[in-house]
Length: 110
Image (cartoon, rainbow, N blue to C red; front, top):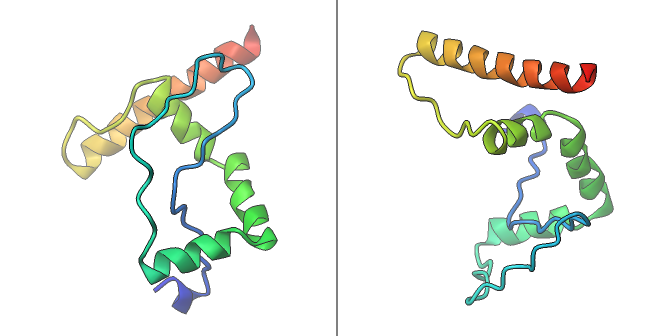
């Protein structure tokens, strides 16, 4: 469906471990290795993501809205909607966006 619209999907196949210089906690050693990628479409996507062109496109995610959703989930603790219905969910999302914007404004004004 995406290819018919000439949209090239770039989908993360595995988790990327961010190297954070400010994180002084010891890294977690997992007991079992990650599962092997055997599905052909996953292998193709993994190979595609390793090209320089795909890396440049995928890197743009950090400069768009991805960090905003991460902040809303981790800092504000909003992981799911608690109301039902489109109108109620829209109102709930508006409140979350307002809280995020107020948080940003307070940081910028300080």
